[in-house]
Image (cartoon, rainbow, N blue to C red; front, side, top):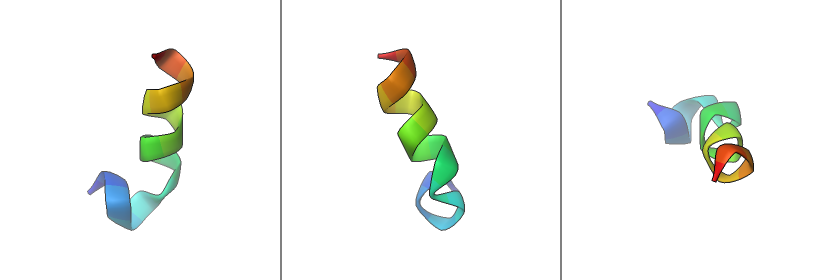
Length: 16
């Protein structure tokens, strides 16, 4: 899902 959205994965790194 994250890969499909593209934004979720970025948000994850931003939160990290």
